[in-house]
Image (cartoon, rainbow, N blue to C red; front, side, top):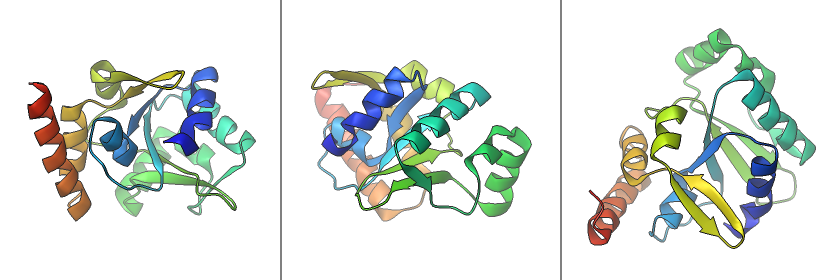
Length: 165
């Protein structure tokens, strides 16, 4: 998490609308799990995506896929990338660092639903939205990955222990 504190601060100060999802969210919800990247679900408006891509570029992040981030501003093009190329996320990385940010573009949980149900978690001096147990379980249930099955089991157990419904 600590490697990503600066980028989370910058996302907030740039008014990027996001919810933290993925492995770091699993950690913040109470499960120990190793992860190398930070996954975010964002509002897909032109303004929000433009702010996000500008911020990442300014911070030295580069896109891994052979596309231009601006292609995602066009909803039709975004749909084609999702349907024809099976693109689920765009990976941004920083040279010579371990810092990677995955922007989820195809999710069974919409940003609007995720932000509505999000938990506000404080780490150090930063508060930010983290996806809810149920929404994260729903996201992970469609991947078919073994690690996600383990995450689902852990999240269900933690949720039960904490008395969440």
